[in-house]
Length: 166
Image 1 (cartoon, rainbow, N blue to C red):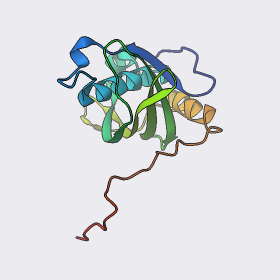
Image 2: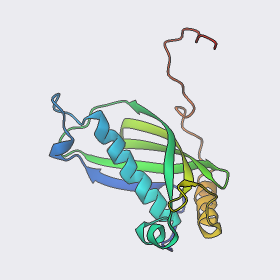
Image 3: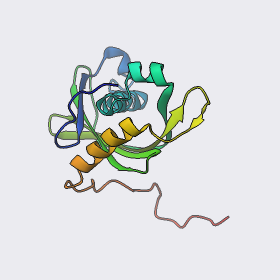
Image 4: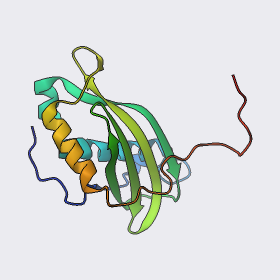
């Protein structure tokens, strides 16, 4: 398991640049690549708590996405330097409630709130996090508890009209 030092503030930072293949016909970053960039941030977050490629291969464990909510605030263009801030808002030993924000400098470009679950790759089903990972996950989550949850966490999509009941 990767034993690198955890960030003191509990936020894992990923830096990257917008690639030419990430652009769409509107000459800005396509929505699919916002998701791809957020996924790179999640990989860095997983590596921070020890779930890196070496761990995955040795233990046949990973995580899988259950749900995500993405918002698009501003455009990203070719060559823009992006910073993704990823943090764990909550965990129950099996699931992670994550939030991520993507910036260009101080400009917020996009947000993602996601739920993922620990996954046994051999059994192809969910499982609790191994104790060593759980300790590091909880340490990351605990390190940022003094920070307020972003105001966009927990938002729903809608036009303000009542939803039909089933």
